[in-house]
Length: 631
Ligand code: AMP
Image (cartoon, rainbow, N blue to C red; front, top):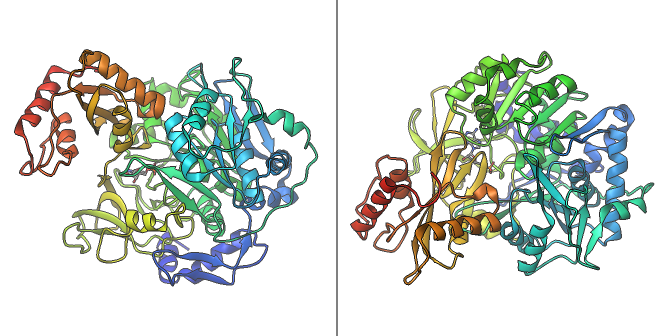
């Protein structure tokens, strides 16, 4: 069957289609109903079926592929490589699950995981899944305030962290950030479980609260922890993501729908089946890491490569040598990762035998044409741009070489994935946009399996954030898009205040709040400004309180430090401008879009609602003068 027929069936006969796909996974009790769409925008897939993500990812493969590699965790930072077979993975996950149980963690309890790309992060996630605990992995690049916000929302029973991460040869201690987050959090968990790699020699431990994983693991070397079977719609994990407010949303995923979406998409989109090797360069803390470093490849019985390190260390050939060494079939990275390599000599792309490599998938941010051309020519394999969101959990727009490779069109992430009934809607009329006309990309509910089921403990926020933008009940992606006559869609950027820095999604409001914690700051506006390497970077415009004696440069330095300490280096402003006034509407709303346009030297748009024209002049002058910090 080709793509067209596969897709048609998925949207026209969803119950038959997904009923068939459901056979790709193990059900302890088969589903009684494939789809319950009686309470849209909520929907339940595979109602009454019971299953378990860990069982499907690990136990199920013991019969046929116990000695095959399941996970290869490579760190070019620590120099360590863990090659883990399915048998060993099963053992480690059982040990980890036993430790979790000994700490009183059980079904429905939340566990926050704050670790870099290391094998134990995968064990921890799978151990949670095994016992029905709900994991919430927080990206290691986030700092204490971000961590505290997530802790307070998830109210975890346990926090698992590494002693430290490493970047570019530098140790980044995690534990002080955890301590600061727990001091700030209103709902700190009673215990912190530390997986130490011996990187932070001065690590401070809080007596009674902080526990050492290695010591506890020793007590459970032979433990067998039975799988907890979960109804398909029970929560499996939370993944927090930024939106327009300062408070991140807990994207909630189910069990059965997610497992089926992973089993189908890993095969049909990423062309990976049992015994084949997939290398995703994502961090486990992102949606891609969850789906295609952990659950997808393991559910299909493949080998997953997990990488901690820079793409250029020890040299820019490292990814390709790993492809050769492990016979990688499908590689998955981000446009920023490739742009980093593009700054290096193109000959590095030829340093290894890439005969096993079939596809390079890139996602997370727009893929610019020069980068797409450079890497396609350099590698000589098709490069497949795919579009998705933390919310969808797997590609919504893509080509599907595992099924049929439709032609690649530069600049477009392709066609809707199975089950996604996508439209482009004119924002003003609410009507479907004509081919070539810009509009908002939406999905007609029910959302396919694998997509979010709700926002953690906040059904109203799920509706308000995603389904309240149009008269018709439609999921808004909050992305502008344009579709051509063949159905290929191009993504034109966010409709909200979310920015995308090196493929990392950040809320400008979160950064503004952080800047404003600096004692000199009266008010701050943050916008995303185009950047050749990272796609976008955060740029701050701030006014200072009256009577502040610090120089603009010192104040700007303090703001940058506040952001780095509270949110992490990913959110660090690239430039800071101290100004006397910020442009606002008469009703007091910040004109972020105009600010962004001025900073990018484009048309600031409709200024009829501007309250004080001098404020805009101020910004123009500041831009001419140059930033108080950054360049
Ligand atoms: P995240 O939730 O962090 O995965 O970010 C999702 C957002 O990243 C989307 O709403 C888009 O704005 C952007 N994005 C993801 N993939 C692509 C892509 N292939 N092309 C353009 N933008 C993308």
